[in-house]
Image (cartoon, rainbow, N blue to C red; front, side):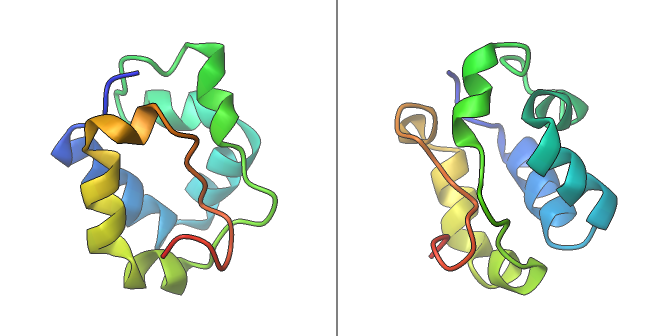
Length: 90
């Protein structure tokens, strides 16, 4: 998959660190959550490979924002399974 654009990554991290409704959507329907960002590959079923068991807290995502943004916008972001699991985002 293509990496997220900088705008998509910023929006994703904004929503995951502030918006409970989006966090719930991201946890339950990753394709719809990614489509909401305008991510071109959102309809690909393999987007679901990034499922989480326990979503990282808003604070944890916010604290790791720069690292997450760098990762999400790099080519390796979509070639290695990525998780937003609690206690693993940093």
